[in-house]
Image (cartoon, rainbow, N blue to C red; front, side):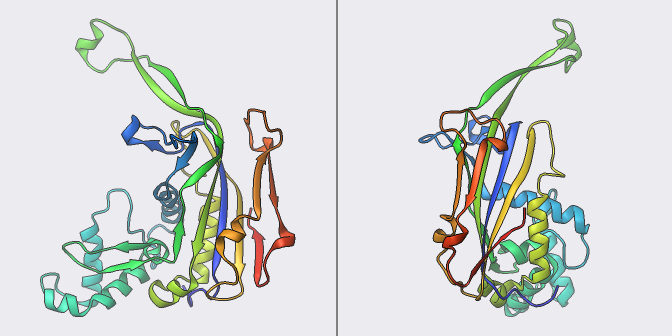
Length: 288
């Protein structure tokens, strides 16, 4: 995995959805998440990190150093047990476990990619401590307000024999966004990577690859057509950074080509990067 990263980074992701639900809200009947004040669509950071984890899991297949901690069907205490076994500590020996909290945490960072990247709270019954990850991602918001549609669908089969006596099909509903372009920002701290998780240059390249491909192996009927359109990276010359992150994010402007048009494709938007105003010590890299 190599040495931890030496430079601070920020990044911006643009992704879109067509005729799908990018992130359903369980508190609203699984409708697309929306800001009730502005009407803009929302995709949570948890959702985005889930896609990144899934891609790494598919690519690395639990190879050494690239296991995924938070994954479907995982029992977290069982994940923690691997650290105790690896360090020869009895899970019932609370005194020894407490004395070795840092080695236990380091073991988890070394073996689980998503802990190295995003951190984790591992203070369950089988305790491995907690660690703050160097990568933080904001909620994604749509560039423009979204319009959600409720589509009635029909299944030409019934569930039970009793249902078959009175009907021949089942009706259902599906929530979609006809089209929306979303933007999210992320931060990568070289200082946290160095001090705690050991997130490396190799891990960083895998992160970029995972972001670019995070929807390619996640297609489903409910999510429609989703794709990452842009990945713009700000690389600082130093560990602590050479400019405030918000000033870098302000250099990217995304607007519809015509103000009053209804956007139905990525080509309906202009994406401009003000390269002339990039602060000294910062480099812009367009990964996509």
